[in-house]
Image (cartoon, rainbow, N blue to C red; front, side, top):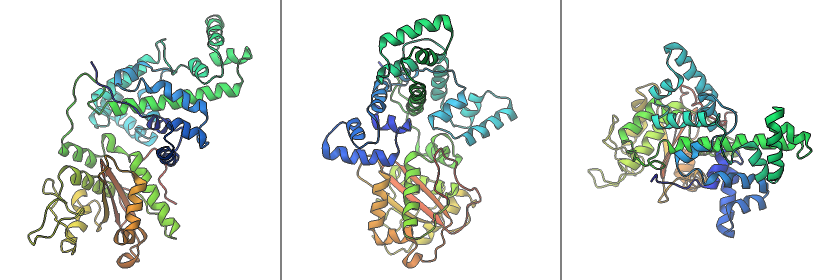
Length: 417
C-alpha cells in the first residue's frame, strides 16, 4: 500500500493563490484562539467566500499520494512547461532558458529538466501522466461542471442535462449552461478561474510529493547533505528559485527597512547560496554545538568542517569574525568578491515561520542593528541581500557590493523599488 501524507487545506489555498501568506498567517493566529476550522475563520474574516473553501476541500482527499493526485487531472491538455509554470515551481523566464537549451541540444524538454536537475524522474513521470489524463474523460472533482455543482451555481440535474446537449451541439459546456439560463457568464468565468487555481494547487502537490518518500509504495532515500548543497550551488531543483518562505522573509525584512526610512536591498543570487548553505550546515552538521580551544561556545555564525569552506567556531568575542566575512568569497569561488555579514536564527519548532524570524531579530539589538544599519553598521550601504531557510533554521546575508549574478528569478515579485 502507498503511504499517504495529509495536504493541509491552508497549503492548498496558498498554492492555488486563493490567498496570500499574510492572510493565511493571520487566519492561523485567529484559529489558535477560536479553535474553529480554518475555512470558517477565513470566511468569517472576509478573506474567502464560502464557495472558495468548498472546492479545495473536495480535492484535499486526493492529494495524499502522488498517484491519486495525478488521477484527478482535468481541463484542456497543457504542455509540460506550462504545467510547471502553473504549479509555481518555475517561472516563465526559467522555462524560456530551458527551451533555449532544448533548441540547442535537440533533446526532449523533459530530458533537459532531468539533466539540469530541475525535476526528478518521479516528478517528470507524474507530470506526463497528469498531462495524459487531461485528455481522458473520467470522474474528477476538477471538472468544470462538477465545480459549478460543488459551489452551488447549478444542480446535478442541470449539469447532466447540459452534458447530454453537449454531445449533439458540440458547444462548450459553459455556453450551454448560459443559453439554458442556468448560469450567467460571470458564473462561467468564476468556474474557469476556480478550476485553474485548483489545478495549480494539485500540480504543486505533485511536485512536492515527487521529491519526498511519502506518496509511493517505494521508499525514496533522502538526499545526502552533499547532494543538497550541490543543488544549492547549481541552483537546481527546488533551489532554482526562492521558496515561498524565503520570499516572505525577504519581503518582510525589506518592508521593515522601508518603515525605518531605509531603501530596500536587491536580492543576490550569490548571497542566497551562502545563506542556504549555512542554514543546511547548521541543521545537518551542527557547527554551533561545540567550543573553541579556549572553551568559549560556538554560536550560530559557526561553520563545520564538512564542506569546501574553512571551519569556523564563531565565539561571542568575535575573534574569528574574518572567517565568517570570507564566506561569500569561499562559497561562490570569488564570484562575489565582497565581505558578507549575517543574521542567523534557529527554533525548536519543526519549521521556520518568517514573521517570527523577523520579530526575533528585531528584538535583539545586535541583529536589529544589521537590519537597519545602525551602531557599528551605520553607513553600511548594503546593496546585496540573500536569504536561506532550511527546516528550522533561517539565515540572511548582506553585503556592500552589488552581485554580478543579479537577483534570483522567482514566481513572486521581490520588493526592489
